[in-house]
Length: 147
Image: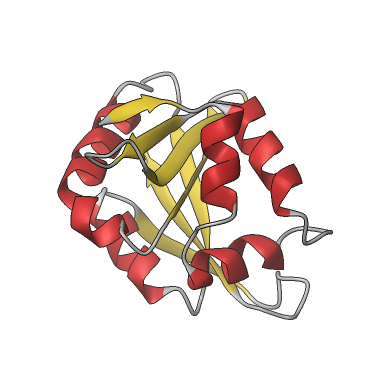
């Protein structure tokens, strides 16, 4: 079930997300404070997927970083795959509901190949590789939808 993202849900996910999601997110942050990451996610707005028991398994969203361009983001727990069909379906609806954006981009660490496959399923195309973008020298890839 998809629900609007709240600070409480964002905090749960910030501390239970997959290890590769942690590595990817923290590579682009000045700090390692997951509670601050949760606050930023909740502030940007988005949605959360809950399992049948009401436990958060993923959160994501798209925020407009400048006119016509949105940055997409998502993190999930190890249970993400069990809910992948619903998460993918809802994510496609979110992307389709943003016709005012002529570009939607997502930055993904080069090592996070599971994320790359999912972004491509959503319709993103692999764009530029950004060498050593992460604070530890991690390479990142820009995935993009251009309309």
